[in-house]
Amino acid sequence: MSTEVPIAAYLILAAILFSIGVGAFLIKRNVISIFMSIELMLNAVNLTFVAFAHKWGAVSGQIFVFFVMVVAAAEAAVGLAIIIAIFRTRKTLNVDQINLMQN
Amino acid sequence: MNLNGNTLALLPEGILTIAGVVVMMAEPMLKPGASRKALGWLAIFATALAGAASIVQLRVVDQSGRIMAFSNSIQVDPFSIFFHLLIASVVIVTLLASLDYFEGHADHAGEYFALVLFGSVGMMLMTCSVELLMVFVGLEISSISTYILAGFRKGNARGVESSVKYFLLGSFATAFFLYGIAMAFGATGSTSIAAIAQKLGTTATPTLALLALGMIVIGLGFKVSAAPFHVWTPDVYQGAPAPIVGLMSTAPKAAAFAVLLRITFAGFAPFEHRWASLMWVIAALSMTVGNLGALKQTNVKRMLAYSSIAHAGYLLAAFTALPQNGIAAAAFYTAAYSAMNVGAFVVITQITGYVEHTRTIEDFTGVALRRPWLGALLTFFLLSLIGIPFTGGFFGKFYVFSAVIGGGHWLLAVVGLLNSGVACFYYLRLLVAMYARHPHESGNDKAVYTKLTPAAGLALAACAAGTLILGMMPGRVLNLANRGAAAVLAEPVVEQDPTAVLMDDTRR
Figure 1 (tube, rainbow over the protein chains, first blue to last red):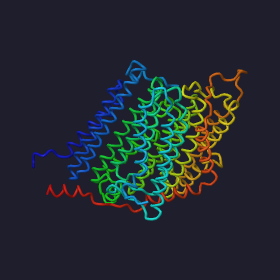
Figure 2: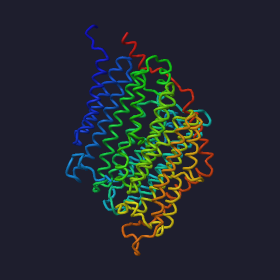
Figure 3: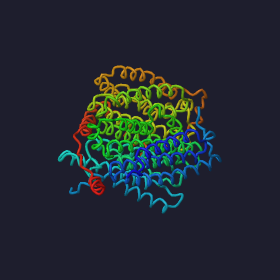
Figure 4: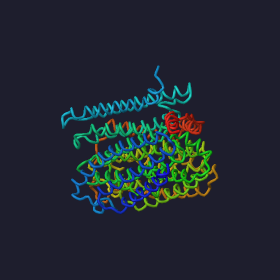
């Protein structure tokens, strides 16, 4: 039992991953990269869920992860389609140039 | 009627899902140039049926109390029924207004009707879920549908840009919401709102739960476009099709507010003194940012986007009030706001049409002189948004601010009333422009007037009637809102999660 990694380690790793995701979301300029940083945040959430599920011995946390994965896949399908649509109309994926609607 | 609990509990959602699938399957079978109106009528009929199903639910709830279904993850009570009826009405009006919107412009309008139906399934599911997993699933069904709808005019660069911004910021918000749920699960070992409330009452170290609450408020704050999480709103509303802006500025927001009300007042009730002050700040900030931002807008849709941020602020103010009054006032305000805001956007749909050459306040010059009825209706909706007596907007504000004062937050009420004063300026600026004579004698050549069809006329009449009824005799709606508030605060059903016990046993 002494070799078991403490739960806190998983939670800290998840928090770091989530922060990297938030940071990348704010810094990155390419739409695909921004989308990838959102996926990173979702995976950090999944890790948190699994760690807490172990702590509480509750399966519901692990089931939640399955739902998050399924929904993330659906979101990716729609998101990539939207990204293709914007590339068709604008010929760029740089968010700084996707700014038709500033006053 | 003899239905088992589970079927009855999700009957409205079930009807809408089936209708959505039928519409989606029928769409590719129609010839590319053929009219899609029949599919639109089918969608309207299905939504009306879903509304009727909610009324059946209300009858059952009246007789035998709330319905708990699917292992206590769905709770049908007056609160969920209130929001079901509200969402169904908004969807019907939006569909009526969109029937002729696509004629001759888009040959895939069937997908639009199907997506609106799927979106409303998600919104309705959010309002009746008392399990955060179901809330999350509902939120995503509603969000993903609206991401697509925002960019439905595929060739339109602004439309697609609006869609991509909505998608990125929306997913970002979802991640925060999920992280909040994960932390709440970590703090309490459950994702059921009732169980969270029970555990939080006894917890000694609330740090994790407070973080969870903060993350959930951030996530839902994005969805309801409360400041400082509002940055996406103006761009998205400006680029999205006008009838869809009417829908997404009201129905998904109403659903998100319903979830927020349940999570805060029922789930995190032990922390009320902490989140009430957080809501105070967000409410004051949203009102001020929204109203000051709207003052300098020239684009009409963009101006109404800022106005919707301000209205989210008024709604959030209700969270600082005493629970019963606050929930009832917030629910009533969402109804009043939905009626007038959808109405305003239906008029704008009629004036601008699909192509939207009429964009700025200047373009609206003289509109009311050429189309007196549309002008009069838009005037009425704008006056209601200002909060003139005998309109729904007035009573909504009245209840919210009296609830806020009842909760002892005088300063917030003063901030809100000052903001209402500021709001007059920009609404009146549009009004004055509409009734001004255009400098060119020939009139405004930019305005594209679509013919007012019976369906759109019906939609407008419904919005006007709704705004008027909520302003003149709000009794019945307020009564249901009050019952809803009582249902949120009622003693919840907490059941030990059977799987948790099972896994505990195997570990020991």
